[in-house]
Image (cartoon, rainbow, N blue to C red; front, side):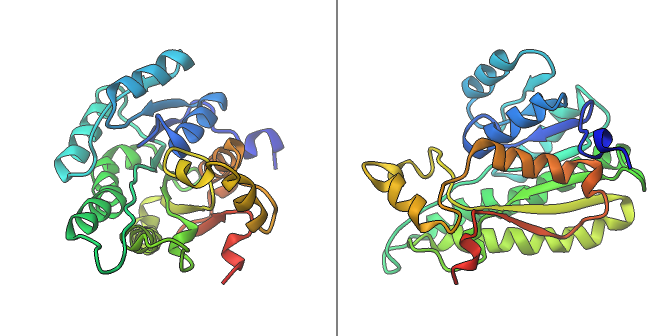
Length: 257
């Protein structure tokens, strides 16, 4: 056992979708700080370019819309112009929609399921040749899906498509984990809890942050290191024998059934 090697991801090639903002940016920054080469993707070319300019070397801006199968294939092809191997794919891009049960539109289901569930499936499939090229029995390639604690318990808000989609991400993780294990590609998921981001900004206004922090068993909201640390762990040699797992990173929220 070499402690320095155990969590080493330096030199690895990592693609992060939705990687310029929120949880995705936390993970992008974490891998970059850990000396990986990161391909940051998102719908906003300006946001991707801004983060890439800020971080400098070992980061490539690849804006894309992964809400369609063709968009996923186009992103995989764009990554392939820079590298023939992909060590880590982080399927983070996602969206939500809240509305009363009697007013919840079909449009919400289509938009949320397309980006939150179909995109991780299609992008993983499109990236498989590069993941296979980076994999072997001792150091498998990694797929890390971003689920949610809301896919593990019933959320407070009426975000029906979101919570359902994240439960679907967790099952997709297990299913792909079984299918790809023989090809030395692990598939795991992170289920974040309350993370300060654009998606949760409306919850944090006024004294909302203090109230939400008090509702978390460990007494605070997520910090960037919490999400980046979990992703780096799942991409590191320390997690080379883990697949099909869903890791709650939620301060204990999953215990509040």
